[in-house]
Length: 368
Image (cartoon, rainbow, N blue to C red; front, top):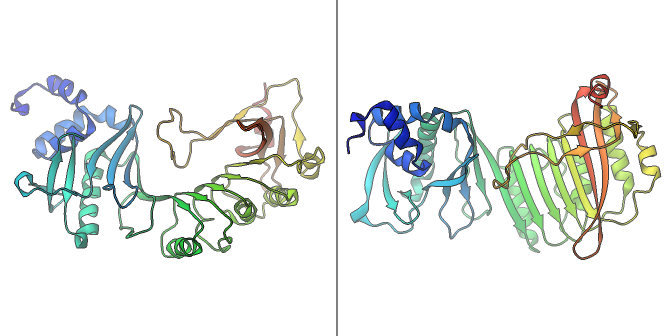
């Protein structure tokens, strides 16, 4: 079948029914075919939310995923664990010749190359993806282990990590060393299974744009974030928390303009322990919306949508009658304290803090 002989409308219909993995391989057929795919799939490519290099562990090959409104699809393996010379074919990827093999059952291409070529191969692949899909979507480099890691120098790529620390102190120290030698991360997901010492105040953990931390048995994460976080969005879950003064200090520092200038959304979730009594809101100087009126809903696009099956990658909505105002620019932050019962019958308390890009006067105009 010679595609170039078909009318453009027929080609568009053919391409519309092809998966991204097929379009990706087909794009290497010729410059003309690649051009036709880009032209016919322009609207479809706009729906792509992100393209992600995903390194899960040492046993699964690194994958390249396309995340769109239609769902998530893998288009390429970055390492071929079953190289078969009889089925190898070569492609010119942005000026570099790379060996590939088709994985027929998973319908995607598998790249074959020496470990010493890691960076040059991935740089070429990224340049090709930018040329083919464009730069309107986000590109992420995400991994979930520290063994044999490396961070390549790539155009238009943000770095994300999702990792679980067990009881090994050396693992935590290794992670801190890794942060210190890495660029600032777009997103950090961290789960700790036991008490570990806090990261240093200068750690790049606190400089990430967005973090999601699950801390069991201790509350160091919450305490440290209330002091040191410099990013935009944070979610922290811990088993217990025993110092409401830390939260009061955090709110007051935000209100004064002393810290947290980039902050957009914080969520703290912990087992209820009666530390937030009725006087808490008075101590942080909240203002109140008339109980008979409907407050506006605070929600924002997530800096990084770590769970791509979500149809709406936004922060949890905050609908609250209480808010505080920042002295330096009169910006508003909504505060919500919510209580729920867990499946085990324990009371869970969640504190939401959402910063509006509006002055108090502009904010009050939103109230019904």
